[in-house]
Length: 348
Image (cartoon, rainbow, N blue to C red; front, side, top):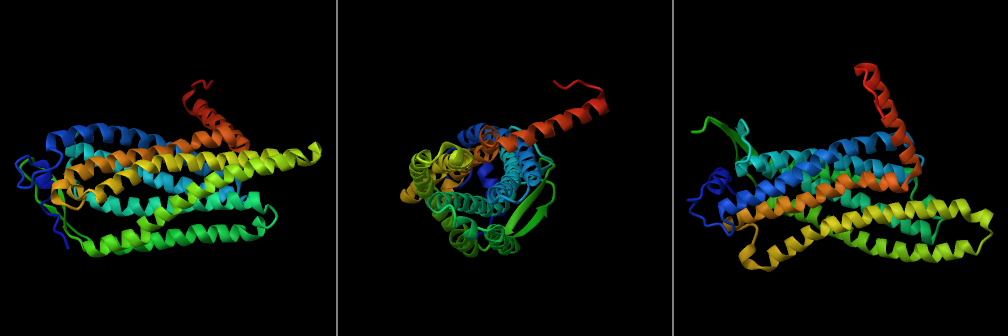
């Protein structure tokens, strides 16, 4: 158990009894930079993923890849909203903006949700990569293995599991609202948290799964690239008219999966490296009181990469999915037409 009632107070107070590894003024500077970038990516990710959800819903559920991308876009949308909230709270802590309520301790709650949502995203990405590998190795059997029902059950099962972890963790927290402080703001304070339960659930139920999924994505992406080239050479030996559509479709889907997986891997590497360094160097223990400021700076740095990952997928879909691009253009034309009718403006 850890009492957080004084957490935000001593982190904001340079005269704190606990000397921080990263001084408060330097922490505030890094938070202003990191959280401004995080807020930018998060705000860009919200409309991007709303478009993804609308388009993949329109494309239908006949293809497993559409189901996966719909799940992934939904998770990215929720994460983008939470990242925006985190960025605003942290910018308030840094002194760049001023909120009517001090929500510093609410970061603890957002961390619980973000870790579980990131696990779901990693799970979906891993399933996509494995399924594509199987489609290259055994293209006939894969349709009977990864049916639409199996795909939905795999994704929904992980969502339910992570929602259970979030629920258990959230119900163990106790918040209270303090009376206005000297600056006239209310303060939301986390007064109780079962840290042993928090760490156990998030490590065994979320973080460990994320690491396994990431390793799976790395291996399967490398395998997919190699296997795809071999299969391409085999298809080229067949009559041109008989294999053209198959080759083009396989190449587009595989390239999309490789691109999505590559973005995921690249944007996850900073987080993995930071965590390994923090736990390898005893003086940088993220759970130590002296490392609180350092943990805040590094967490916003990591989240900026993850927010970019969730925001950038739309560009992959536009470049590599012709049906997505067609529906995207149709949707924009519809929006433009509605704008002209309502505001009388032109849309080029």
